[in-house]
Image: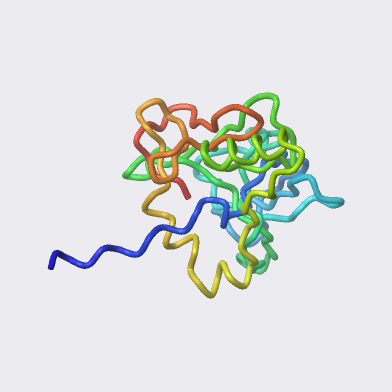
Length: 190
């Protein structure tokens, strides 16, 4: 018998990745690495999220910017600031370049990011009146932590040569378009 096969990767829709818009941002008073942000992800109130991006961006770079946010993580305190999600960026292998993943221009806060195949299944189900709902429900924050879903998915998250965000060889889509990095090709997503 051959080598044991690795366990299958979790499906991308286990993550609740949504388009967000940074509506307020300030430097964390007790950390020279963190920004504190209020991000509109299509919920009644903006989420407060801390991001370790001060080495790469200024406050002005973040204000009113569209970003991708992982929304189904358990809230965690970063330097005492309660963070209810994670902003996704692409980074070069040596981390000398870290930049936001940009959603398509017509995406709005709350729009869900899926792989190309998941997005096409959802679109087909929306067009068919009697179709079953596609199973794209995200994992709960407890499942995310207990099953280490994001950690298992991390090696399969990257940007391709065209700077398009990918999961296990599939493009990440929202509002009919791809999510892209400004310059990082062949980079990691985290």
